[in-house]
Length: 584
Image (cartoon, rainbow, N blue to C red; front, top):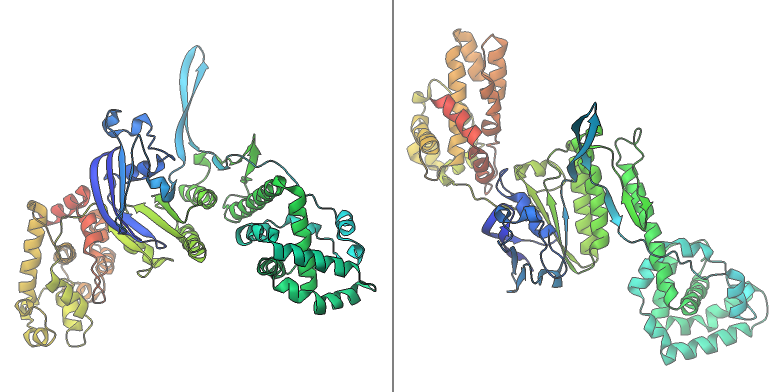
């Protein structure tokens, strides 16, 4: 099941928009759009979902008009349509939803000094409430001496003290998730237990000799009880020192069943409190291990009232990247606790845009690990990452082409030229490599001397462009269309045009013939500019800034097309003006 479309109406900056996305479960779905397009509106829509309706903050209504009714609609590839508005929410029937976004907010404190009033402002990081309501502190009712007495005559010989096991939250989590306790009330189970434990307590001898007798005479009947066998196997898998053999495992299972029966409804309450202690410990250790400012701030979950809360330093006391990775991890831990349904949606709104490489790897590692965990549980999670970053940026880290699904909330006004792509794909062919690198991918003053008609025919490339001067006529026509018209443009042609124009402008500033030759023979546009600087040529800062366009990799394997991310950059008004400046 994929999420085919998401339709948003009257939420923050979006009046109405239908996004055809085809989101895939258990893979990072990266939604790309430029700043100002409405990514935060997208996140607000999901963050405003409540169990039975959408609840928007007044400032998040479209045009801040509360009469504009908010609607969020999902269509699935199963044919279902799920709708949430201010009267209903059928999305919550199928999905648990959690949103991770920027956790800073401005705060103003009014102060008086010398009879005058001043407002002192600061940027605070919102506290993270990991657990809203801490479960009641209910201990397990286990006493080894009492348990041995309850067992019968041989209890003191056979039963080990398993107090330690009641501190292991993961053990009881697995038991509660995997064991069907109703089976133990069935007649075959009751009869087997009655006869087996009566027979065990009727034996004489040492504990070891009785265990040997149990191994031969009783274990086969225990093993025949599927749920009892599963419970013993779960206990054995943890490798507790108190459980040395199979007989110990079944006797330990009996002790746990006895505690459960004795406690009644309090048993589940004790499990909940134990799970809480495990969660608190896990959150504390995880946050501590990724706390880059632990020498200055003791950041850890603390009990406030009846909640477990993480309080953060002031925003100005740590860097944006440190803040983002810490709050992200804390909120991800919270989302794991909140996700109960088989299908879940996790929206991550641009919180990773300011992370350094190490923290970005940490971010992607945690998302990937979360996905793997959900898959092991045979569940589906839709991680939706909202960003203005080039999605190729992520491929340098944990995510790769086989894992990520990229969609564009705003489709750029582009039209790729397949013949240009073919030249890029074939540029490494030995028959043309040196010529196209020198005369097509970089500026060269003698392009009128080159004719690659034979080679282009052999490689099935556009023969009309076998002479590079013809190719650049096409390129510069596309540049004019991009700068002065409203028709769709080819981003790859603009990349070629910007690269060639900047190199030509700098080449023309060099007077010495030897340095001109050295400039042409230097590899890479950026390196050419640095060479020119080294010989005293003044390079406008714009030429370096436009590296965001001309440094786009034009080494592509067949089938890859970078036109969309490049097109989004080219639609930025500032970048377009910089390009206009180098051509006019």
